[in-house]
Image (tube, rainbow, N blue to C red; front, side, top):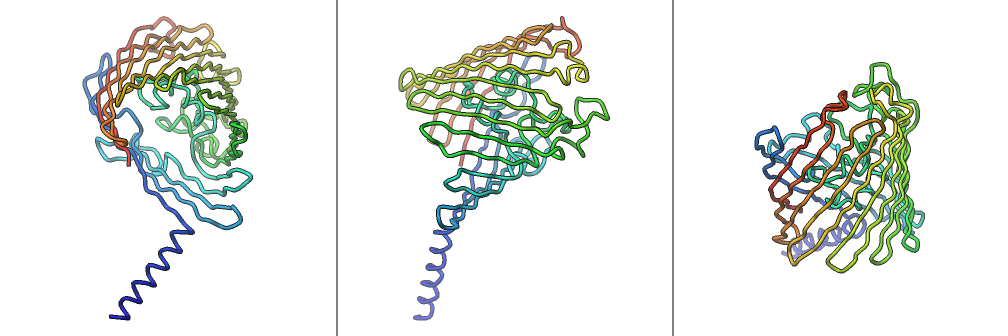
Length: 348
């Protein structure tokens, strides 16, 4: 009996030491609902990305920590990897160090530009048709144009990240990727012609400022084919319940307009939005435009509602109307598409 009690005490002591030195967290999101858009039948889909992640830190002493994060993205209706063809850890796969100098990481993840602009879009960077994050907010920009079709447009592989400490509300976030992270052996396999190669190392930088009710962001990025994008955005808590936000983005495709078959090389876009909280409910509303040179404008109005059943579970409904070109090669092929969704989101 004494030996058993001693064994239990030793196990508990060692577990306490391990816990003090290393902390690992399992987290995730499960989102499922029904969606319908003009010309398509009702289908099961998602509003937010479904994730399963593992992240942790280890205390190395003297204020230094090792950290890692792995994130799987999957389809809730089939249980398969997101889009059926993306990497297992498509969401994130990074390891690094954190200290008084800030944080450095290596691997795969969102670019700093893509990661910070999402905070100024009324659908909080959800990659669904009802929101603005994947199109109008970034003026149609693609961070990884040389990766295979159906790949993520806002992440880099084989990249280095740096996040500075927050000083008086300011933070600088930067990343640079190697050419090997631009596509299959640095060669185009997506929308560009065979033989097109990465002409530069992609890099991304954003500066954010948060102070009380106000937040600001300036971001700039250049991808592997030297398409450039910059954004300025801001948000303001007008009341404890009302958040207002606005962003402006300009994309420059001077280096690739010919190969991509585009009639113009500049695209301007803007989005205005608001979130209004009423008890357990939240109203989301936004309007934006995307205006490429010598091309038809895209105009979008969206309205959504979220109802929280708990801190981790909410119901949602969205309605959106988007008017613009529906054919990449026909300037006058313009029509409106209505989109609706209804579903449930749970995080753990």
